[in-house]
Image (cartoon, rainbow, N blue to C red; front, side, top):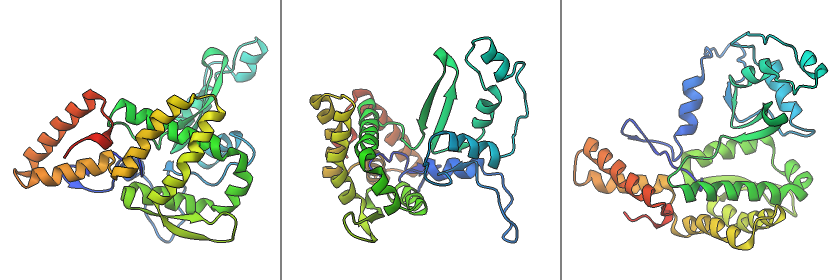
Length: 277
């Protein structure tokens, strides 16, 4: 919601983060039949909370989705490990590349092998500083809630988290999300802006826990806070700017002018909250 930046498609004003439903729909080749079961979409939010480790996610992908490209590597992982090599797991990596979870685990054998999380939910742009701020907020939150994760997960059922994800993408800062009342039972719908305001200190604490300096944390979380104060994300700016331009010129010309102004502001690396309409 706070980072939404793709509100238009082919001249139509759609979701605040239209990239989310567009990618999901464009990759979905399943046949719709209400009388038969459907395998999970290859672009999805996931099947449930991870309880034991990233291995669960690799197992799900391997067991739920049939391979699209049944290509086998020349050498087996056992052969590679017997010779002191990092296993390439080429078949697994190829299969992973055909399933697009919004938070996707990635194994890579480069530099001795490593595991990373591909946070595909993060929008691109509109400026470099906005993207760093988005990442800082997300990573800070991930670290900040970690000490309380055993309390938080039971309070937010996975289907509610998925519901919140799509409502935030659809409505941006106007979204109402289902959020738990910590300290008591039950959830209720709350404005996303109020939730973000509550979570900013948590993100700050999380960044401090991983060694980010106070000044650097304040700089990037300040970008998020300013968006919240001005109620202006990349999506909101584009919507408002396009509406103003359409009063003066045809839609095609307005879209062209919108892009020109967007490029100029982006090149200045000015946070989107400071962009003028």
